[in-house]
View 1 (cartoon, rainbow, N blue to C red):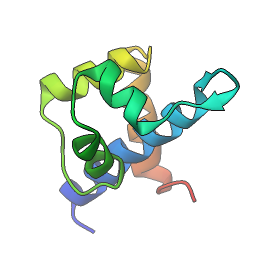
View 2 (tube, helix red, strand yellow; view 1 turned 90 degrees about the vertical axis):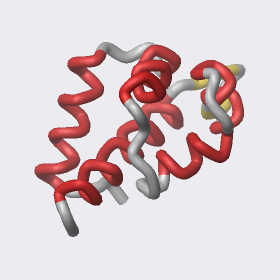
View 3 (cartoon, helix red, strand yellow; view 1 turned 45 degrees about the horizontal axis):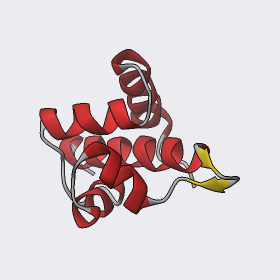
Length: 88
């Protein structure tokens, strides 16, 4: 796996795991809801979560804000996944 592919997978994994950890009315936050919060399309978010595309800096910033994460915490998780591999 190339460095770019690892980065895409790590970013997608961090977004998905943090989205699923957020509870709304006792249920995991949906892709649709996070996409709306970040003002991006559901299809775009799905591709990012699957590691199929690398989001631009502005898109990524909107997703991080919608997840209520700090920039530093997000990148620390990405780095951890790049070191340890994606979570199963």
